[in-house]
Picture 1 (spheres, rainbow, N blue to C red):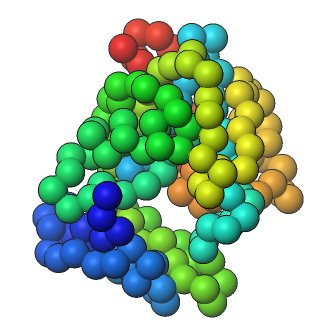
Picture 2 (cartoon, rainbow, N blue to C red):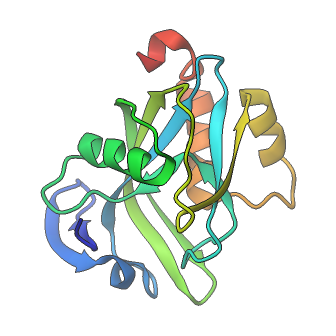
Amino acid sequence: MSNDVVLVDVHDVQIGVCDKRDAHLGAGQLHRAFSVHLIDSHGRHLLQRRAAGKMLWPGFWSNACCSHPAPGETILDAASRRLREELGVQASCRFLYSFEYHASYGSIGAEHELCHVLVAQSDAEVSLAAEEVSEIQWQTRAEVSAQLSELQAHFTPWFRMEWQHLLSQYPSFDTPALRA
């Protein structure tokens, strides 16, 4: 797969292609991304701890899978591909909403993404790609919310934003009917 990301305008119209690392340096360049929330049949959410080798937010907890579609790849195809590559999970994703955000990680770089938020359901056994994920936890909605409320909790900024939006705008996003 390409190591390029798709640069976009605020309306998600492609305006170019850029090396993934370059897109995240400095203030970052606005690019297309996705974020998958994986939920099991018991309504538990898979959280992943980002691998120590990640350039931005290493060792921070986040949702199941976050990445970028390759040029010419759809969001849904890319999300299914990355779930397989990072977690060894085959699952269909469903689009919920999109949002733009910008978050800096010290002087190293930044995320400036137009992020498409997806949900998927699976009870499959997870197999971690060590270069992407160092560990996982399955947690209930209440457990995730409690952890996020702790001042010292190390969660990625996009996950914090998504979680609050999901709870307020999609209060039943983790019920079986909405995951289907």
